[in-house]
Length: 141
Image (cartoon, rainbow, N blue to C red):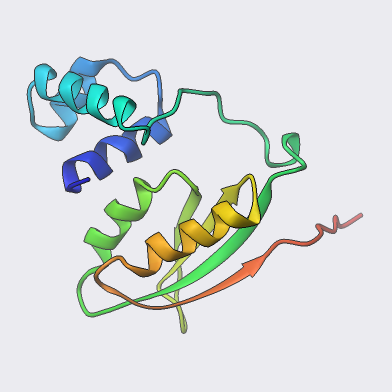
């Protein structure tokens, strides 16, 4: 996958029902390019379907983790674009302090989490990561 694929996936994560014409216009490419990319991503199994976003508590068997990410130099924009294309990234936040980004990860199994962590750590421009798995939530009265 190249940067255009990652950007396309990021846009689909935000709105999987976006028309091809809108995606093409926002990415500065033709509708044919988008159709070809979508077909290739679907055929190769990167896109396995389209779905609705649910409330975080609507899927209790899901494994949730937060990954703190440190970025090398001026690579933030490129790294953000790549992370937005990662299917397991449910949220991505800019932070201050020791870490540059905080990614919310959601997967169906520990094995899938391991694969996601491996993929993310291989992204050029990521200097370090620290991941914490969500165990329990508390609500204030």
